[in-house]
View 1 (cartoon, rainbow, N blue to C red):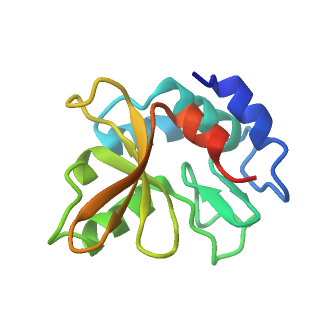
View 2 (tube, helix red, strand yellow; view 1 turned 90 degrees about the horizontal axis):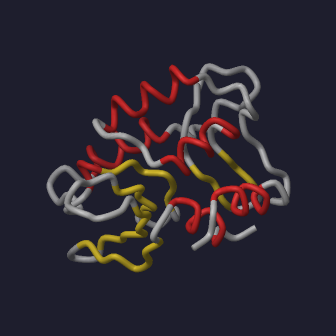
Length: 154
C-alpha cells in the first residue's frame, strides 16, 4: 500500500507543478467536507493541506480552489466542489451510482471522471475512474487517494 508521504514526494517532482502551496486553511477543508456530507479521507486532506489542488503538464487533481485568486488565470477552475456540481448537473438523468457520495477530483476531457468515493456502502474510501457509454463503466480503481496520486502520470 502506498502511503501519502511517498505519493506527495513523487508529486513534488511533477513538471511545472502549480498549486496553492501551504496556503489552504483548515476552514476551507471543513467547507469541502461539509459539501461532501462526509469525512474526507486523511490522505486527501493532507494533499489539500499541502497543495489545495495540483496542476502539472497534462494533468490536474481538483481540491480547494478559489477562482477569484489573482495568482491563477481565469481559465483555471480546479475546485472539487465546483467540478462535482457541474458533473452532477450534466449527468442528472443518468447518475453514476456513487455520484452523489463522491467528489470529482479530475476528468479526462472526454467525459470520464476521477471520483473520490466517500460512501458507507464501501469498506474504504477509494478513487475510481468512470466513463459513460450507454451506462457507467468503472475502468480503473485505486484503494486510496495516495495510491491514485502515486500512479498519476508525471
